[in-house]
Image 1 (spheres, rainbow, N blue to C red):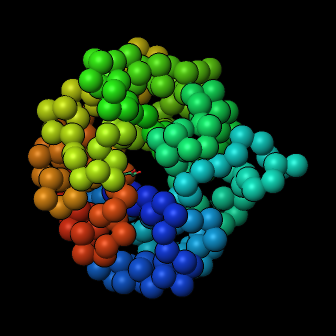
Image 2: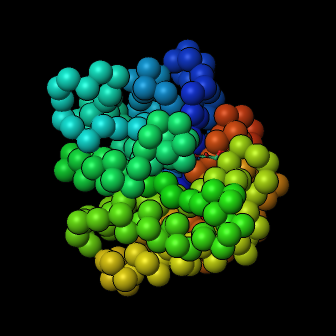
Length: 254
Ligand code: 13P
């Protein structure tokens, strides 16, 4: 039984005050939700204020990035311990926007994942996904396989078990163009297959694989009917209370 996760990746949106207002309303609207895990990932400066509001609620806090060192001369970076200290339980790693604009590679993803796992208590949400030209050149499976194998290199099955994976086809992010349920499911099933090869079937069966890329109330039903899709990493639709709440309410336990 994999419990669905609905994670809102707010990207560089909302001040601390706006974030607090948002989660205060969200908390009320989802207070009876038990069969789904709800996560919000605000900007760093809003983490602590949001943590205060959602403490003792069913909403979990996530960050959008983390560094692979514990501390030191790394201007502008934040460590896993610092995120935990701010109330985080999740952290997004390797988002395609980090890969595209900030030089993220599978190797830096690997470093971040390892450090986060060492800092027990923080769950990495590891993002993978192909670009449009890669899909058009039929490289999707190759790209995704490399991202998983390199990003998770050196991890033991017991560590891999603790991860959440997000498949986010880059061409579907913020474009309004969603992968069809068939397109998404075939990659999700493939990802589970690779995870099974590297960590064993028992582990791969337990890992939640989220879909990300223009997920919204209008397209969630087809996606969530797929056997290997265990929730969503949601951008735009998670910035609006009504659409995020309807996505949460849609997803049931599987
Ligand atoms: P959109 O839902 O806005 O397409 O963003 C998806 C995403 O990048 C989540 O991490």
